[in-house]
Amino acid sequence: MNRTSDYCEYDVVLNKGLKLLNDKKMCVIGFYIIFSINTGLRVSDVLKLMHKDLSGDKLFLKEKKTKKAREISLNKVVKNSYEAMLTTLNFKNANIDENFVFISQKGTVYRTQSINVILKSLFNTKRLQISSHSLRKAFARKVYENMNESENALVLLSDIFNHSNIAITRRYLGIRQETIDNVYLTLE
Image (cartoon, rainbow, N blue to C red; front, side):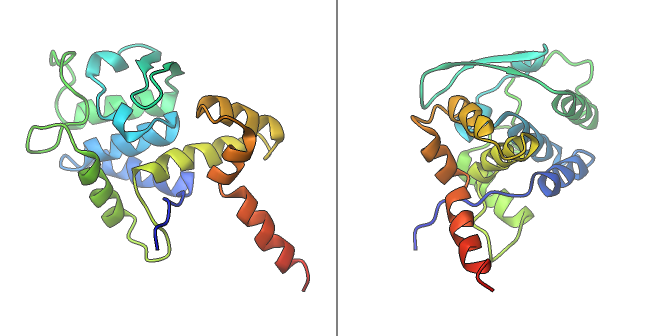
């Protein structure tokens, strides 16, 4: 059966990412997780980031898939996690601006496939289909919950994800299926 990625619980994923920041071998993955759930970017856009891209309070990029320009404010969690990663890697005062952020232990930029294998092992579950896209969905679900599961949240997420309408965003978040499932459960 060909399934799309499931979303992960934001807090569970955040805690895992924060824990990995202290591990020299896994701190880059920890930061990848934290960055992804706080920006909602696709893995293809995250992996191409350079250190100079994270030097300010905002991130400016052109999305690979949509070719649209994006401006993202970097929150304190992302900024503090980035600093923690640099400290763990002893990069605090190094001149790394022209280097990619998400470098593996082999010295190359992580590939999407590698990220997905690592995420599957970190969030070992038979019940869920976990991939890099699960982190994008964790971001979306957190925004939706923070905005009291409102239509306004769906409109905002639809704009962020460049969906053509909120019905697509609703389906993307799995809200429609949850609503259908709840219909059956209310008959008890």
